Amino acid sequence: MDPTRQFIVMIDSDQHASTIVDLVVAGLTEAVRVKSNSFDYKGNSCELLVNDEADSDLVSQPDGFFHYKYELQVTPLKNKPMVDQIEVARGMCELIADSISDKFVLCANFEDSLPQFGPTA
Image (cartoon, rainbow, N blue to C red; front, side):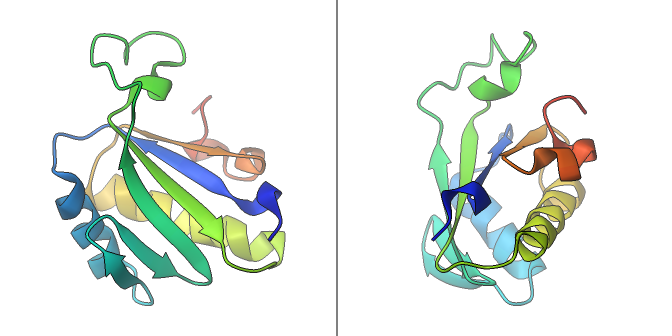
């Protein structure tokens, strides 16, 4: 597994973690639920975690996304082309924007390939 293909989506939402995972799994055709807070999708292990540094008072500050409530960690289970991983991230971010929250940020080595979802968006 190449760690440069791993990515995190920071999400700020009042929804419960299991509801967020339900929405993501329902919206991504090939997603398969593993646990209440995790699923597999296109060769990735995906886990939604509560951010230990979440602080609603700090989300409006510069780099406030580091204080969003949730982290969706996406880790490839095997090596795959970068272009495929970028498409996985694009699909997840579009789904999050449409179904979960407009407050999210993609954090990845390849975030420049998806500037509309990155920290400078």
